[in-house]
Structures are given as C-alpha cells and as structure tokens.
Length: 540
View 1 (spheres, rainbow, N blue to C red):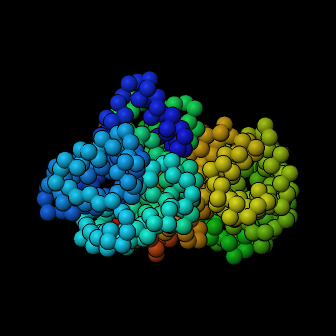
View 2: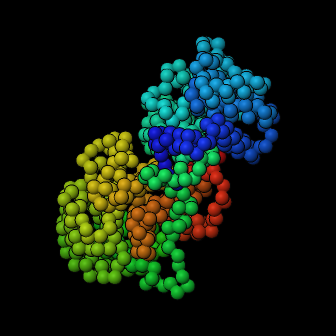
C-alpha cells in the first residue's frame, strides 16, 4: 500500500472530485461512516447499540471539522448522547463543513462554541463522562504547534478515560514528518482516509496515532495506485507474495547456501543468534566463519550449521579471507558483521568481500562500524553485486557523519538518499523500520514492538535476511521479508508476555510460525484495513 505526504493526498482528492466527479460532500460522508464503524469496534465487544453511550467531538473550522460534524450526526441518529465543542465561530465554517454543521444542528445533539472559562469547565465535565472522544480539530494540512487555547483542551483529552479516535491524523502531529511541536492528541485509534500519511510512521507519529485504520472512502483505486508515489507500507498481502514457494522435490541444496561471517571473543552469541535466525527462516545450508578461538562454542550452540574456524583467537584477522573465499563457492548469499568486534585487521578482508563476491552481501553491526572508519570501502562494491546495509540510528549516524538526532529527524529522506548514493538496500532500524531501495522507493514496516529492544534481536534479523537471499529472493524483497516477519515474531511474543522479557532466541524460534500463519491467511477483501494491531501500541 502506498504512503503519501499531505500534498500528494490533497492532489489525489482533487482529482477524485474534479476529474472523476465524486462530490466532496460524499467523500466527507464516507469518511464519517468509516469513523463511526471504527467507534463501534472500539466499544466493548463491538457493541451494536449506541444507546446510553456518550461521545465528545472536538471540531475545528476546516474539512476535518466537517468530518467530525458528520460523525456527530450519525452517532446521534444511532442513539448516542453527543456533545460537540466547536473551536471556531459559526460563521468561520464554509462549504461542506458549514452544511454538516447545519445538519447536526437539526439533531438532538448539543453544540458549544469554545469562548471562555464556562466552556472549559463544561468540556472537562463532558470528557470525564465520555465513552468516546473524537478529534476533528485539524487535518493533514496542520503545520507547527497547536494554538495555545487548543493545547489546554488537548491536555484534557489526553487525561480523559474515554476511547480517543483521531480523524485522518491526530491534531498536533505533522502529517509529513510525524513531528509534535509541543503537544498533540494521543489517540488510541486513528482512521485515515485514502492512503496512510508519512507522519503516521515518522517521528512521534506512531506513538500518538495508536491503531491506524485506512479507509479508501470510495476514491478510485487507480488514483490511489499513482506510480508517482514512491513510499509504501508493508502489509500481509504484500509480504505473502514475496515468500519463496517450496516444491516436493526441494532439498537442502535447492533451499540455498549462505555464509555468515561473525563472532569474536565474548561475542559468540551474536554468531549463534544470527545463525538461528537464518535456520528458522528456512535456509538449506548455513556455514559460519568464525575465529578459531570461539569456533567450538559456536559449533556446540548451533549444531545444524557447519562451522569453519579462521585464524585468530579473539578476532578474525586478514588471514580469514582465504577461508571465506574457499567456502564462497556455490554460496547464494553472505552476511558479515554480527559480533565481529572492533578489529581493524578485518578491514582488508571486508574490502575483499565487497570487491570479489558477486552474490548478495548483507553488512550489519561491526561491519558497518568498519565502513564508517573506512568509507571508501563502499566504492569497492560498485558493480560487483547486490548490497544490503542494516544500520540502527547510531550506526547510520556514524556512516553519514552526522548526529543521531539528525538521523531521527530525517529518517525517510536520509534512508532513500543513502540507498541511491550507496547503490544498496538500506534497512534503517527503528520503532518503524524503513527499507530503502537504490531506485528511490521506501517501505515502512508496521510490525514489531519495544520488546525488540534487547540484545541479539538485530543479529537474528541479519540471519533471517541472509536466509531469504540464499533462497533466491531478490535483495529488496529479502530485506522486507526479514524485517516484517522479525517484527511479527515479536508481536506474537508480546501477545504472550507484553513488551518486555522475551529474548532474541525466542524471536528467532517464532519465525516459522509467523511465516506459516502468513501463508495460510487469505485476503478478506475488506476495503478498510488496520496497518498495525493492538500489540503494536499496547491496546486491548
């Protein structure tokens, strides 16, 4: 599914209205129905009857406010006690928003214009009693900090006990960057229209958006599939198509041979975890090149792999290249870096790997740190074969010679720019990992949770990507598969244990299960979809 910035979404809506002929009022009505249906799902057991329930709708003067007023009308007509608080003068509402205000005023719902202390007390009381709070203050066109008057009410909403539903994007979250300048609505659910927005995946957007649901609101699919849009969010359907198909005649030779270069004294676990990630992702033959000083440890811990010891008691040194070159025959993929340690002697070997091996190569962890010290090494890969880099923000900062803050504030643009510059697939890890392609495309990963913030999970990911490459999956798709299923494994574990306490080896061990579930899951054909589920944001 494509992901857009605010201007791209505005252009899509304008084409739908002016070229396709869909009335803007119909789009607003469809948006309102999508929100109402999601509110129904938010209530206990998807309660059909709204009678006795209370809703507060916070409304601004723009189209987002018009959506909120249409939602308010539908909720009243279905039996809910609805109070609207309007953050604008009545005369400021224009067009479809003004029409929906008139329609709402014809119902039994209550509407108050925010003017002073009286409304502040009234709002506080209404929020304390509301089962549902709908944020329809500002849409995707909002930039900068919220007005100070609105901020006071936003803080009240964030303390309210009711379920908070944001329309299109939580007010205060920048639709393009996810930046929150001072405060923003903290929603449990965000219903966004047409296509998801960049800000739902960047910056603080994921933290404030909660469960994100996308509804096309009847915009033609051809407009939503505009080839000029180069950012995407991975979905089950997308990733299922990337999975390699196994045949009855398959065997360990046809399931791919991969070489993992990893480990150092005290870091044998990194090699083991990466190996386990590869094996649990279905690799046929895994061979691990590791220093002779820890080879026995690795061999004992991961019996299914073939272990090749290379010279060096504590670290791999320049003599490791002869072992790597010998084992590279018939290998479909290489992964280098987990647990290698800060060993400059390995720099020459890394240069040989990049310049001599034509099969896909994944660089992670200490291999990336060596690249940061010797950036010219990247130039050795040009034209030799596919390359995947998997940095976390700190490693990306070192590679780009900037601060971590610079990386985090510019994740999408930086990942894409460097993927193009380095002619590599860049997997920029984070709360929402971005997979960027050398052709300028970028993919947001919606799976995973804070439980992945524990030692060794990155090693598991490296091994998983290695396995998909070895099985013949193209580099970009292999990176997407590895990241998506890795996150899904963590989400499965979070369902059992919450966001802490599960380990990297458990993440690896769940990989076959989540792959199988994905293979068995069929497309329901439902137009609206959830980008990420309850586990992602701790919702019940």
